[in-house]
Length: 289
Image (cartoon, rainbow, N blue to C red; front, side, top):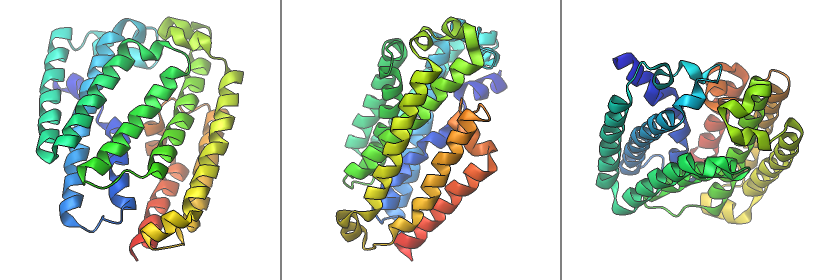
């Protein structure tokens, strides 16, 4: 039973919440111990909350997940975890996550509640609307990034919000493309919204968003406003890592038929993982050395 609960709350997916550290990193406050600790607690809070949302989604989608070649192995879909126990897990996780959020500060608590509410609305309604479904996923990442800034009481940069939104859209449309190709003619049995998409449409959307991600990040690194705020004009040297990472992910989507889980790609594709690590090291060197 314990194993079923762990699989349901999906600890590997907690990597998505690392975006909460972006505000700390790019505000130049990584070395401030108090703020770094607050960011860690904020990350922990959103990990607990995210796991509650994953469990809720598995309850809602249990019938559809049984028609998916991968998701059919989820404990709730397989009947290894009862619905009653799953709801109990949700209550415990939400109580712990929101309780921790309240100890950080009131504004962070409010945005955590908003994050839960938004994801419930997504699970019940928004994921059934074409394009809006992917935009909703992207907005969830923006909320995470904004929450990270609120946790340490620094302004959320418009550049952070825009870049987070565009990158999340890129990953989201890539995920939809992978689902359509993986499920082929049975796509609508798992998720009816997939009937509204086609590989061609998604390729067009991915193309638009890819260019936007690269250009917007370049503009960010060359912005005089950012240079003044961060005290350096050298952030542009991180551009090659971003460009390669995006192009590598496109390769995985189109040639390797991966991209169904960005988290899995990050953990299993060594070039992507190395690129992310090198990008983080370079950013830290530029901002703090």
